[in-house]
Image (tube, rainbow, N blue to C red; front, side, top):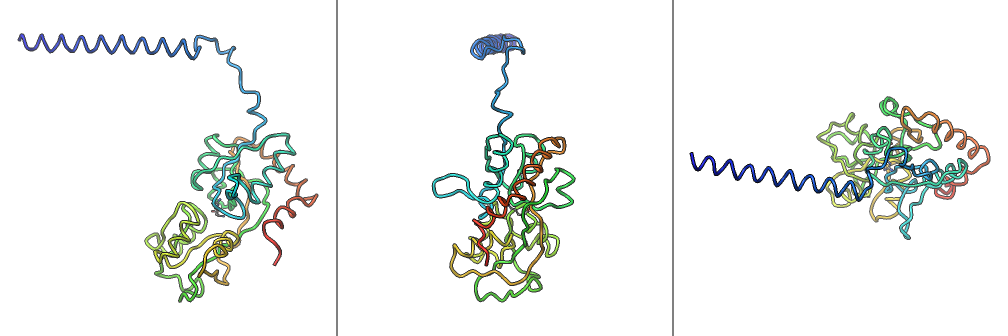
Length: 269
Ligand code: ARG
């Protein structure tokens, strides 16, 4: 019995201490942050509305990549910059995993996603797409001398893809998940190909060209897997920004700016 009372006493002390400590911390926090202020005194950041927050996955040259000086560059970055300028906004870029982009758009942590993103019916259920500004083709990269000569030879082969991309979706649908290895970006998938961990990589053709140019011993097969439209993605509720974006895009198409940006990064063959 004595022991029981002793335990109770200790427990009571502990509880009392926690209550006291907790109380003190709360009060201090309140004083520091000034949360005594009435909501009316909370001033919203006036710059926020002037900032266009673009989410991307900057490992997808020539659409988006990190330049040597550490800045973001590429077709999407330049188009978004030109659109922001037309709308009187400042562009802010958030670099993230490709498969986080649609949740980020829907959740409102970014205003739009621009990432060489293909318009698909599945994605259209989650986000609204702008007018398209470029086309992409899914390409197959193999090592030089590979026995894979076309998509018909991919059965049972190990395919590397960037997770959540259309290349991933097609490869999984057509050849089975067990044959598909997902990487968090295209260059890691290409690295796996160079290390013989996969037999090929399915990725959009322009990034494919960049990766092949940057690495010895790779080639792109002369088969077009699919042709796709790229567009910017917006939250379902945010039709106002979508309309502004489309209006600015139409002007930039009409005055030749979009063509010039694309030509800068993709010289005519
Ligand atoms: N076009 C493909 C898709 O929409 C791949 C895009 C990957 N983009 C990137 N920035 N990593 O699924």
